[in-house]
Image 1 (tube, rainbow, N blue to C red):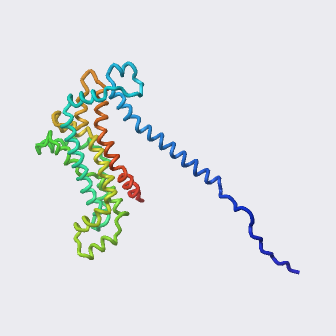
Image 2: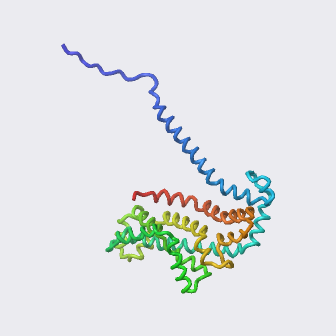
Image 3: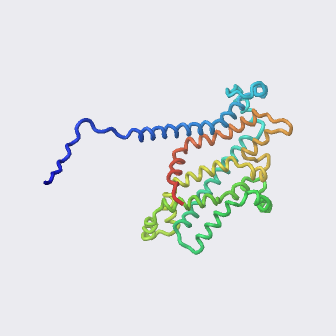
Length: 296
């Protein structure tokens, strides 16, 4: 005697709810991430706020209440003192010239070298790329003496060109653009350009350079910031009358007395162009970082 298997009746009533524990875990993880990011943001902004607070007070107010986080009312007065004490406008012009020129040169040469390493085939390519990357391990201080001798023989001591030309090529920039173009530029586009009769330079200018724009923007922004805040080499090679902003602000420190309200006021003034740059180029920076997060 066989028993027939009856079909199960269709479920009736309300459908089963979704798995709430997993949804709760995701919500908690998202809230934790936002809390951590908020803490990191506040910790990163605190030094700038502290500089603004100290730079807006006079020496007596700093001594009377050194731990207060409330700004004073002397920021513009201190800023006027900073501008008249050091060659501020000359230093500002030099910093804009040096940082802008170095950023353009680094982006151009790094993109060209990255295109060659990533998409061209030539003998010794891998070894040469390893050598370029290995130069990042050499401390900058080791090359100061021979670099100073070269600049002296060229007659560039005291000139901004002594700061621009040694920084025109970046090993990190070459490595970054090589990694970026390996993923962002398909080989089919290069082959199509060659079929159309384009030369290597034409292919780079019309195909590789537009594809490298987000990564090049990120590299240019980081190079601009690093050059803007560079103090060591400009302090050695530039004259006190022809400085960049970090070198000029160093002149606010006297031999036996340091007016921290003036020094930190100058720091805030030097940081303002960078803040404006981040606000303007922030979207492009995020795009470059996300598209540049490729596998090595």
